Image 1: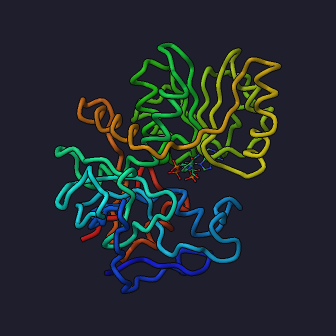
Image 2 (image 1 turned 180 degrees about the horizontal axis):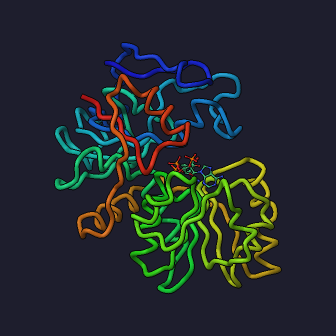
Length: 321
Ligand SMILES: NC(=O)c1ccc[n+]([C@@H]2O[C@H](COP(=O)([O-])OP(=O)(O)OC[C@H]3O[C@@H](n4cnc5c(N)ncnc54)[C@H](OP(=O)(O)O)[C@@H]3O)[C@@H](O)[C@H]2O)c1
């Protein structure tokens, strides 16, 4: 099969289109013929090897050679213990541990997959596993947003952010989206009531406070977030600098005890429950995946460059012919 392979950390130039063996599913795995796979910041981070946590699988060289974690496709074959799926089923899912989705076929644990609704395209389904789930957890499941609350989403013009704006509006919040100047109108078009250009204004220094902050790209001191939170407010961090993430782990519990403000990391759950919730909201016409660009498999390097250079508005999707 064709796959986009990398054997060292670096720019998109280290990615090569190669012929490799079709993987064989283990007993609990499903072999999926990939139809679409979305590009995530986590792919970019694993490509360049930064922040440091992106090298968890291999400090000097990547241990897994094919990126791409959010896939949608058709079941080609199943392992002997697989009960939920059979060949021909249309599925989508999150392959965070080994990825492998920038390829014509990939193996996935049965537990990582869900059936794709018939009315949703493969491309739309591939946008959901990380971005939709981060947004659902941050806004509804952990964030427990209430009507009338003030919600700020940092990095709101990207993959998770575009789902998060829609969800926060759906549940009645007043939403502030933070991203670069080129994405301000875009965030407004998704429903953001207020927008902030992060290159001109620091939302933690303008005296405003929020009941809920969802930060997909955190790099400030934990005390800056504490300042920007209203009494009893909550802040959830999904990704960002190692220094900030470390501070949150170390100081978050203490801030909670002394101020009543929650400052926590948000980890994407591995079960497909949230992915299914997003498809239900999609079918009810309440959430729409926002696809900025589509690329063929051979152009994964260009797709990653587009995202990494900060141009993507919403999701970038690879369509695998
Ligand atoms: N915790 C977990 O379990 C888990 C699991 C998977 C992924 N993750 C993390 O979740 C995050 C998901 O992000 P995503 O897929 O939504 O990324 P994305 O599509 O790249 O969106 C991030 C957005 O943030 C903007 N941005 C960059 N620097 C910023 C700054 N200083 N202030 C405000 N906005 C800024 C980017 O715009 P520019 O164009 O200006 O760069 C982009 O629009 C990633 O950090 C990933 O590592 C966490």
